[in-house]
Amino acid sequence: MMFSLHVEGTRLLCRAAARAGVKSIVMASTSGTIAVTDTGDVLPDEEWPTPLEIISRWPYYASKLYQERAALENFAGKGRRLVIVNPSLLLGPGDERLSSTKVVLDFLARKIISVPKGGLSFVDARDVAQALFKAMARGEHGERYLLGAANWTFDEFFGRLERLTKVSAPRLALPSRLAVNGAKGLNALFRHWKLAPPVEPVEVEMADYFWYLDSSKAVRELGFVARDPSETLLDTVNYVRDNFLGNAAFSRAG
Image (cartoon, rainbow, N blue to C red):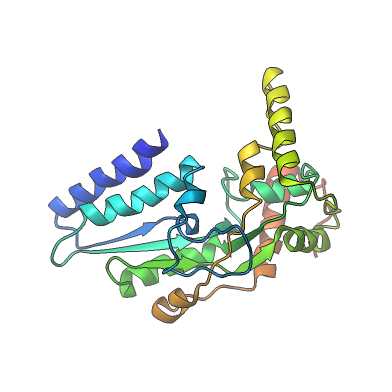
């Protein structure tokens, strides 16, 4: 299903656009097709080798990589331009389906009991929206542009959330294998009782990696500007609390 949507759907769309005379497409992908490593001592940019040995474990990121390739192959030709934008985790207000802000909800609901060893990058969805317009005006054909505002360990990320919300951050750090196996056990138990599990094993596995990135190219070529990540976190917390936890569940972040 994911492959059909991301790859086959993109192939059909790009071919139809080319036949209709469309000259420019800006495609929103994900930084996870480039910027994910085993360690946090590097900041991958657009020239970083594709980490196939890592992302091939997760259908979403693998399908997004092949989506990019399908788009480039099917929107080629003189006068056509395809620009790829690769944002990291999207935070900020307005995520009605919790597609990327679920980690904040889980933190507020105290569902996160241990600190993963890895790290994440995130960016404000409002800044990415502006970058998409800039990519249409300034982006070069066949180029990727990584977008991120902060590269933090999960320990730092949870610490920032704790200071904003007064909700205690997890302190326990479990070995990777134990954390993943524990998540699988909980998942099986909750599924057996037809309940939604508190965490998916794949989420625990991915959190062991570092999703850091370097946005210098987007800053230089697109004029990308990322707001203070503290503002993004504050707005995300307030949106999630007001819309998913109830106005009285937590005191308003200050």
